[in-house]
Structure formats: C-alpha cells, structure tokens
Length: 341
Image (cartoon, rainbow, N blue to C red):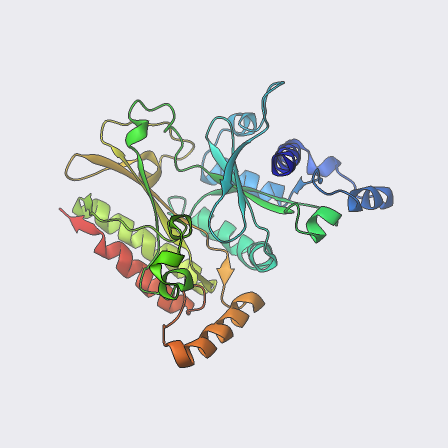
C-alpha cells in the first residue's frame, strides 16, 4: 500500500511538472519552507524547456499539441502507468497511458549531474546535427527546484527524463504479442552477479536484469547495413568523447506484417526497418548513457574492481572499463549480430 501511494504521488508530481509553465513558477522563501517537509508529492519543473521544445519541434518533428496531450488525463484516470523498477540503477519507470513516452527517474547523483552538467548541451548540439541518430530521443527533463525530505531520504527521486517509447504502437498491433525485445550489452565483461556467485545462489530475477542475448542475426540489405553501422560509429564516438560507458542497444523485432504508429520524424530505425529475408521489421535505440568514467562513483568502483582483480583476475566491469574499450566491444557486438545480404 505504501509503495502504491508513493508511486501515485510521484506520477501526479511528474504530470503536474510537465504541464506547468516554468516561466510562471517563482521560488519563494515560504515555498522553500513548505517544500522541505514534503516526502512524496514534490514539486517538479521542466529544466531547459526551450532547448527540448526546439529538439521536439525542429529536429524530431513532433506535434506539440499531441505531445502535451499524451500527459493529460481525464478525471478518474491515473496520470501515468507504472512500468516497475528495472535494472540495478534503482530507477523507477512510468509510461503515458497512450504508450507514446517513457519517464525514467535518475536517482543517483553521479547520473543526473553528468547528464545535466556534462552531457545535455553536447547532446543537444549532436542531435540537431544528426536527426536520425540511434541515440534515444530525450524529449524533456524534470527537476525539483526545492530541497525536500523526500529527496534527502531517497523516498522520491527529484530528476526525471522523458523519452520516446520505442514500443509505441505495440498495443494496437494485432501481432503485438509477437514483438520481441532485447536489451544488449557486450557480454565479455566481469559481472559479479554472474561471475562470482554459484548458479544455485543466483535467482532468475537477478539474472533477468542482466543484458539479454540475441541468438539470431539481423538480416540487412547492404545499404541498410552501411547506414546503420555508420550511425552506430558516429553515436558511440559521441558517447566516447563524453567518457560514457555501460550503455546498451535496445532492439525490437516485430513481424513483417506490423505497421505500428510512428511519432515524429520517420527515421528508419524508429519506423521499423524491413529485414532482408522478409520476415521481420526492426527498431533500435541506444539507451542508458548516464554512467561517466570521470565521475567519483565510477572512479571508486574502478579502484574496488582493480583491487579485487589482484586476486580474482576477472577483468573490467562494463561500468569500470574505459570509454574507448567499451565502444570497441559494443561495435564488435553489433557487427557480429548482423548478416548482410
């Protein structure tokens, strides 16, 4: 019951933050005082609203009225739907009721400071120059303008990114139950939950949170292959220059008969690229590029892993390797999973 109440309060905060006009929001001493004692229903506002609005309108060609409509609900409807706590980051995930967008919290200090201070401006510049980039489209960013007890005690995250939902259209597709999803990372790194603990001690739920494996091939025509590989090289070079590691390729494979809804710019890997063998369509985005090697938390973990490896000799983790090494293995993983026709 407590968790449900917290999630309900958080979804209302997110909805209000997305529909609130930041220009009409003014900080006050009384507002600071009242907000400090808030645990769950914290106030959120858009950060760099105009930057994201320009990306949506000019780069990705979203309809602004339709975009905002995705976050409005009628009386009796929940503001957003919970998508659970996924992965090891402690993030919470929510989706809009129409399935168009996903909201992910960034509860860890080193993640949201990296995105907000180091990555946001370069991301904006890069996406404007590469409108068909495979990097996930981040359409908004919410922050709490006040310090609250909820954020101090970790009850309520104060930073949230809004992203496109690469599964948009699945619920309306007659073949939606045949869609397949894969969250892919290079597998030859050291994962403690996989490489240290004996199999009987590791639950299936724990293993399910590790990167998936794609035991097949993407069948691509030569031109599609060259365009995709070029985009992957450019996108991962951008992430390498930002010193980011541990990102993943989120792949969707759907039946060739599927023609799901596409939001905004009709980029090939968002619209659904037909496979060369005529059996499938593919969607793909690069996700979770918020772990930077120069941040204190990653540096501390690197030291721990290096110390452990004096004895264990297990090698680097995906979160402690260098950005060039991660990029090289990531591109090798992508190339290995493709068959060119």
